[in-house]
Image 1 (cartoon, one colour):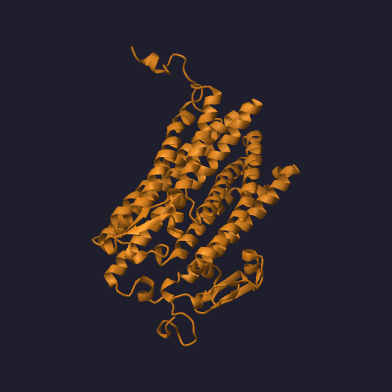
Image 2 (cartoon, rainbow, N blue to C red):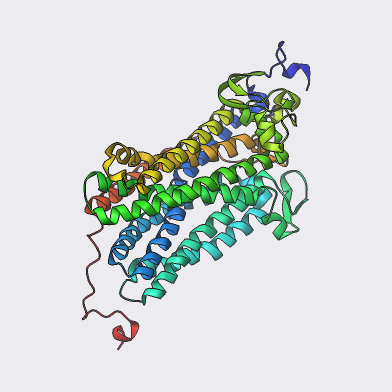
Length: 482
């Protein structure tokens, strides 16, 4: 690294603007980039509240309805119908908030869209064909098919909705993972006309990071959906309402959340091994690792230029990554300054994500033990703690995504296209500001609508079911058509 990129003590300059955003950019262009990134981060983060809930809740619905069909217990029927209605609310808001991002690619990130259109477009098309249509098609039967189709057909629809929601995660994670570790492609053209073309579709799908990141994301979604069920069940138990059903749903939720938390630890380990191998800059930033050598595990710290202050256990990081405490890991001081991500943000978001994961595992494990001992209903403090605990996996999801995306900077496609070069050439900062304000107002209204609908449904409880079908009301086309 050249001397002019370093301070006298050998540390990196604190994110010089020209280094961070490209030396050739003017202030106006930097403003456009920053605003475009803020807008996409805001819309994506808001949207990401809902897909993990629908994926996790889809699995919970399969388990609940399967339990009903296996036991014939009417309580599980009421439980399933109640959570189907909540699933429908989440699905509707999730679809509404996700559409915006498709347009942002074209308006704010036209160069990126042109560059990766062949790759990203194929993954998004697969998501629409194999996932969204499957999920939305069977959702109608799931929500409105009670007493209109056979129990087995309804259960099949529940499975298809759960599979469809998971398939959505598959293709979105594949597309995003290609941005992290591109594979199965070639570059055609140069400059503004350069495009990535798929040469190996399955090589693109199974790129070096896709399966690790998929397993980590899906297990996190299972925790999120399960903790929503745990939260509402604990709420009812604290209020002594719907006790029998809440006791059963709490048990299902805690078991799923615990198993998914174990899977989260395992998948997180393999994801870290992959990051160290394919994105050394991100791994170094995640741990605030400056000098090439054995990697420690920092439990709590603050990275600054050339040094990370905090509580660090020496060599543990290398031991976990390579089963060798002396295994060298590349440090930030051996990486060109222009390729280093924002260290402070990457470091803190990563450690917050890990801390939340550990806290959830301990909390869920303790609650599960009390459940097996038959004492959880008498521990009001624990139930009250579980009610807001659904916020934790949501925060963990957000912090994990922040770590992945900020840690990839300054690249939008790692090693190929810088974020500063991916912007639309004609978009103006005032247009982004206007649309950002409008999106914020709309999303705040959508969130308030979501919370109102969710709160109203939870307070009405599972006994407020659909009205029974009037035998005189036509339910088939044959009865409606002359």
